Structures are given as C-alpha cells and as structure tokens.
Amino acid sequence: MLAHVALQKLKILPSVLNELPQKERAFIYGSIMYQAEKDDKERKKLNNKV
Image (cartoon, rainbow, N blue to C red; front, side, top):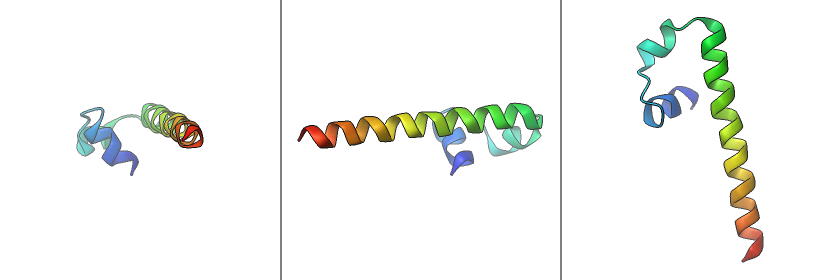
C-alpha cells in the first residue's frame, strides 16, 4: 500500500523509491502513514456529524 501511495500521490516510481537510502524511505513511509491516520480521523469526524 505504501509504495502505491508513493506512486499515485507523490509520483515516486517504485524503482526510485527502492533505491533511496533506508532512512529516506522510512521518512516517506512514516509521512504517508501519518497522513492516512489524519485522513481517517477527519473522515470519522465528518461521519459523526451526519
């Protein structure tokens, strides 16, 4: 899932992502996970208002 988001949202090809140093990949994956959690919280907040 993380590589898919990197490709679709960040326009980072899987081959480029794979060649990044481990710390940079970890940062990108962490950022994607953080955004996903933030989006989930916002979605739940909106669903509770309905």
